[in-house]
Length: 137
Length: 296
Image 1 (cartoon, each protein chain N blue to C red):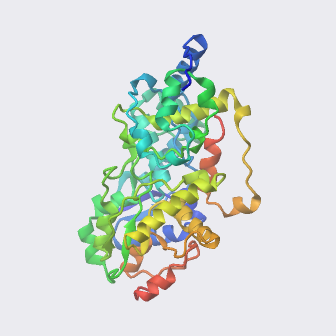
Image 2: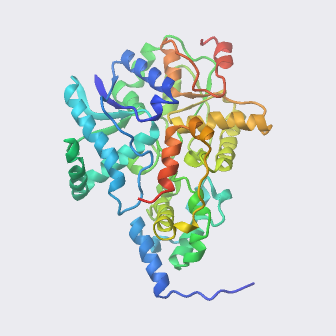
Image 3: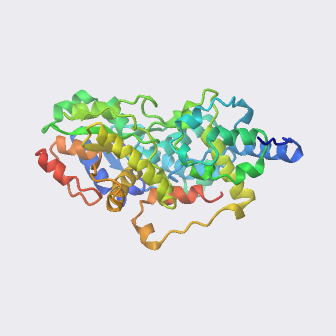
């Protein structure tokens, strides 16, 4: 078993407050019950489960959160948000992680490739939704 | 009664039959959907970021244009009606947000000035299913049914945006009944199943198709296992994902049988005796099922 030294210094606190600012949510309201993860349609596709993402955020572990695939797997279906017993908008926290990357570290994003043939076939709402989730504004 | 109806983008492209059947049905039920003369895209997904007003401008512009439209209509309510569940959710959320936040509404109205528009904050956004349930009533629909949907075992797929978030839900978010009640009113059989709001993967169909396929497999297999022979939905994106990815999965040999996906208005049209134009929006051909049941 390996142990990790947990440090919450200035850098960590800055990251936490930025995420809280963007999402408008109090990260420490979460008591890690795991209901969000249990109800998430995409838990089996995520490298960090939803409650793990929130836990890493509570500790300000920026690198772990920003390198995770989970926020990009989240499709904002909001099941977690309506079920959270602490009334946290969990999906907004996932969105704030995406937004942080888009605003401050866009080099982390892999550029999406869509062929013209596919784009013609897809419904507009799929394209608009995807573009809006993958671009900063 | 007439309603100011906001179509959104998809009803004009790959869900034309949804719009056609809904408008025809609305005339029969005396709750007519009258299209707004001018409208724009709602933005599809509502912004969950707390510090961004820009992304709330488009929905408010639609609300203000609908207010203008409502003034032209006779015998109407202060209601904007949508068919697409993503439009419904986005408009409802932003409508509630600007009602709560006077300052944000002022900022957005300042943006709208150059179009000579102003949103008062007094409109309500309703999904067409809500109109059917609350304004028309299922009793009234039962009276108008000409051909009962005998033999149709229908799994109602709500998807996420009809039930989430709390600001936008049209029914109880864990045990919704509106589509089931409609199915019964039309003489169909209700299938009880657990995947009624399991997300279909939404916009991931653009660049993460695997995720969508995974969800579609779970949802459609779940419906078939419980004896359904049709799935109904209210969302053009859910319909596209469930429909097109089933064909993809069948080609890959992952599934043997497919299950047709309908918009709820298509089945209403069949039951109320309206002739369907075509089935060109479908990927899984629904004609064999409808023919075998003597419905077309």
